[in-house]
Length: 147
Picture 1 (spheres, helix red, strand yellow):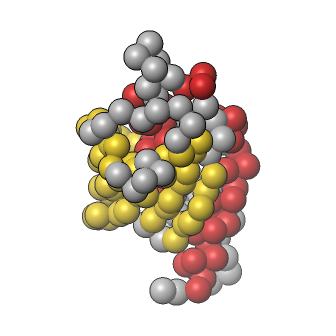
Picture 2 (picture 1 turned 180 degrees about the vertical axis):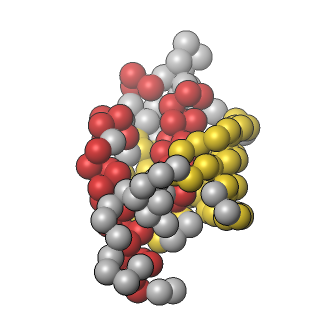
């Protein structure tokens, strides 16, 4: 992998995280990022539980969506979601920690497809998310010289 591309992915992730009050407030941690890839984790707090005593699907979706955002912006082109879908596979209990791993499947022109696997602390899949991205104008951070 190109060291400049990795440095740019890390700089973009830092800038995005610093500007992302929601992800920070929810306790998300960016564990890894590289071009086309991001891994985030989030502890499941008591206030994340729904009326069935399990993690609210919207919060599982939010973690996956954040991992998707970090992965598709890792190329340092401002990128937004154009659409997405999620499948919930098993319930998540309070006190668990979820990890979302976003992997770029296709990047063609201004559009990309990303798959996000959300797992619990035991490594079991709890949700699968697929997002379609669209690049818009601008950069997340100032591009490195020569890029």
